[in-house]
Image (cartoon, rainbow over all chains, first blue to last red; front, side, top):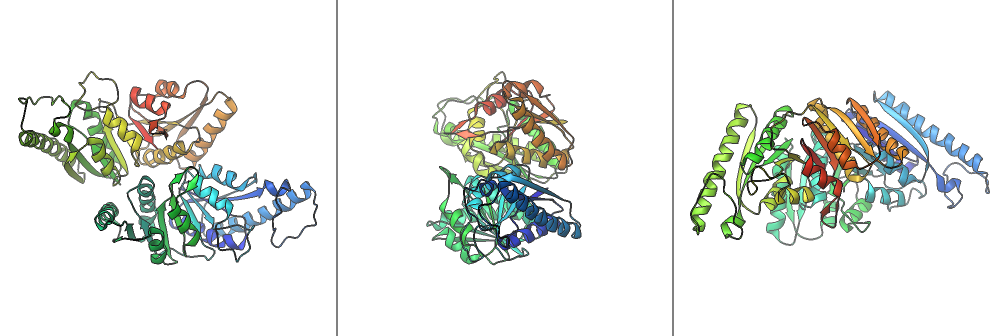
Length: 268
Length: 268
């Protein structure tokens, strides 16, 4: 198994860094570390906050590229060292490009992608979803875990299940994680018709139990996103399908990824 | 792991029955056996050939249902017995409905779906794809293996790879099968631009090698379907993405599933 961590080394990415390392350790997976030098910076198209680094503007492209390279190397070296101390097999990739494009390209060669909810372009007080994360979640062929800022060790899982194609995939992906991680799974099915909600919940419960997992199933009515957000503990991995229509992420998935207190696993 | 075998017990399904049992044995998976009493028959909407059973028409619905039930029970009993003799955990499901709808519903609760290329509605000489299989391949949220009529034990795998979302999923799914089955994988990437074909082939090769598989990569130009069909041995599992646009299966996937000499794994 290959876990890809995409990080810009910002404080907002620390939760993702810790979670990716923890998952790689628990799942005996190889950890791929990716830092992307943002080509938009090099082109000077968009002014971005470089965090601790202040450089006089206008700056020469070569100088900026050198600084970004040093920064990327330092971040990757820190992560490689930490992974090696944990006994993990790890590999670091440093490249230049549009971050979402580079992340999506490398996601093709990974079984799971982990990243933070927003990057350094936003300050630590930003509560929303970064544009890179938003694009990656909408387009990744590989399941994505969006981690909150605070590091966390998973203790349970919550599965939003409505029998849709992406929900089925989310259930299959979650199973592959929940079993080796020993996570107890709560299934949440929401529909105005309680018979429909109950039938979905039972369907998922039967599948998960048969895979040897400890399962509890809840059939509810109301707004699926609100229920999932209310039920998630910070140590729960919240798994749900992320269907995409006309390039726009479904409203439940988008809302949940933006507002969850813990890590969210989305599967298209 | 749960493997769903959908069968109507016809000679055309024997290859799928044998392959599903072999896969369940090799992968230590639970085998779910599904026989669907075709509701269209009971409604008398479409005349179908019942094979060895000849019944006078017009027939009463109850009588026909009783006959179909006996037939389904006999088929499931034969398969259950065979599975038990192989030491497998198996479960049989007999229900009434539209076959593709029932199969898709149960596919949600399985990790892999195995079925034959056509059913009893077609005689043994039929070379095409049955309408049930066609609908299932286009809509299954779970990877599908379409098996030819002749039973076969897999010895190798062939992966069509063009870095598309469904091709990435096919690569991930194939890895989970090829590793425990000990299959050597040949990657086939086809594009008019040899640089593009080569870059796809190398990308898949790197991923598969890193997963501990024995891999050979081929970069070719021309028609992807023709290359895949020419390279497949009857004992090769041919894996490819099956993208669906406006409810129509992509032409490469459709052509390959119709004409392959061995089993085909499609992933949407």
